[in-house]
Amino acid sequence: MAENFDNKGTLGPVTHGAGLGEGVAGAIAVLIVFVAVQFGLEIPEPVAAAIAVIIGYIGTLIGGKLVSPERTIQHQRDRGNL
Image (cartoon, helix red, strand yellow):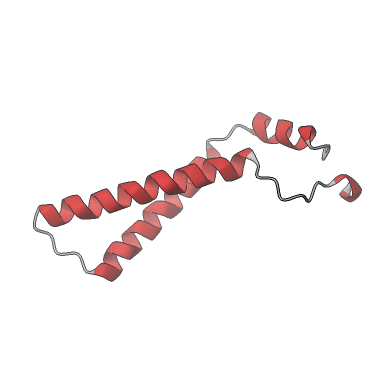
């Protein structure tokens, strides 16, 4: 099985989904902090950064999980790994 493994650095559907989730979540985190500041909440920069990281992490998990197993299996079959 290892001899069929494609190690050419291609990105699969889970990686694409996770990247999209991270990007969207990062933007949402910035907007949340911005809106909170507009309402008069003082958020220190390290706390704002932590909020962005946590929301980005959640977005990455959700984006990766939203990819159907069939797409992942088909991606591996297309590359001859299964």
